[in-house]
Length: 515
Image (cartoon, one colour):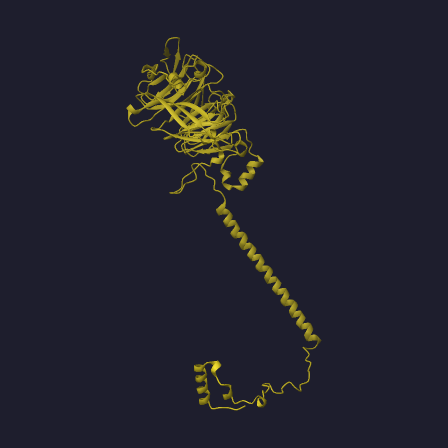
């Protein structure tokens, strides 16, 4: 192969780059193809080599290597198994932490504290009906007016009538209000109900109408005669802050909602009778007899006095001799549901006292210590005449068997619960289910209970295992309705399972799926 100096080679490269490859003259390449010879760069290193066989070792060395291999494999498997177990344990621990975070939290009234930005909202899936209605002034007591729309009403929408009294800041703003709540539709619609319910039954907005009667004082408690629908005369007694007990006839106000053009005169807006025997001493206890159709009313004040007022053919008569026995305020009075002359009272002295109005001494026939705190409210079972429920200022409530009441002996309650952590403000047995009861408390809740539930119920045990917080809920606990500053709750006798409750700024009409 001919060679050329580096300078000449560089010159040729530059010339080629300028002229282009196609312009390069081939005759300048002074190469004789026949004289070109390529040499093997590896030479003859492998040309004459003979094949050689190398042995890895003798038999002992081979067995030793197999043992080491088996040991290595066994060690590797052990380490891998340990790693898998550690990963599984770590994953289980992580899952438990996640499960704890994602597990639904149980709200316990009076115990669970909401955060600064947390608001408690009702779960609509637990209600068959739920409607809220605001009012201008707090209405701490009310009663339901029985109507002529029928009993056992189950079809929506519903209508209901109530009477209440206000707690206005200025005396001149206080009123007795007769209200009609209508278009109360079904809140939760099951798939099976879709074809049976119209849009009006579900989607219609509730309507609140009212008629007012002026009253000079705030109303502490108000009750309607249990014979109102039967007689057509809706007699209503209101216990006032000023000590007077007013008896109103709200019949025309009640009828005016469904009879346009009904005339309500000024005279109809005034009480038909005023009980002034309590003087200027206010009271909270008032109850109509469920067994005397003409009208028999008991009223009690904070001085411990109880007076009986009866309606005659042309006037009202109040016995000026009081029933006395309480050491402190009389907070509640309940007439017997089976004995015409018997009633029970309770007060701040913690005693339940049983009376007979035929007694000339006006002294209690029986007195039993039921609480170390105030007894605020009571309810006589409408189906079982010897059962009486009481709610106390320390949050406890109980049910008593009056057959066990003995003079100078402390009875044991049939059932007793300390679930609520604040004062009980209202308690009422279900009108037809003798074991079901509603309880309202200052802790902002209304709870429903079924006293017939046994503690060893399998379903309840399963729930308690699933949610640890349920351990604090007695087996008899049915449902909890949240309403701030709840004051009173009543069952609606004509709409099964429906309740109405009042608080400082609203009324709530509701029916849970639990009852």
